[in-house]
Image (cartoon, rainbow, N blue to C red):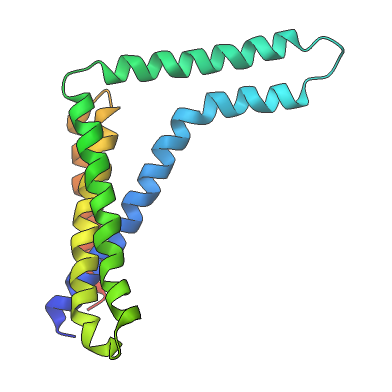
Length: 162
C-alpha cells in the first residue's frame, strides 16, 4: 500500500469512528431526560406510582416538543432525509468491497477495491451523520465546524501514523 493510500485509509477509518462516537453521544444526550425518568419509574416505591408515571410521561412529551421545535427550522427535513440517504449509501458502499472479497475466488485481488469502497463509505456516512446532527442542532454552523474538526483530527491521525 502506498503512503497516500495508507493516509486515506486511516483517515477514513478514524473519521468514521470519531463521527460514530459523536453521533452516539448526541443521540444519548437527547435521551438522557427520558432515561432518568425511566430509572426513577423503575425505582419508584409505594402503592401509588402515579407521580413517577407522570414524570416519565412529561419527559417523553418534552422530548417530543424539543424534536418538533428542532425539525421546524428551515432545511431540517431536507438535512434529516438527505443525511439518512447518505448514511444508507455509506453502509452499502462499506459492505460492497467486503462482499466482493467474500465471494471471489481470489480475494487478494479485491483489496484495492475494498479500500476504495471503504473510503467512499466513510465520506458518505460522515457527511450523512453531519447532516442529521445539523438537522436537530440549534447552532448549525457550530455543528458543521465540529464536523470539520473531527475530519481534521482523522487527517492528523492518518498522517502521523505513516
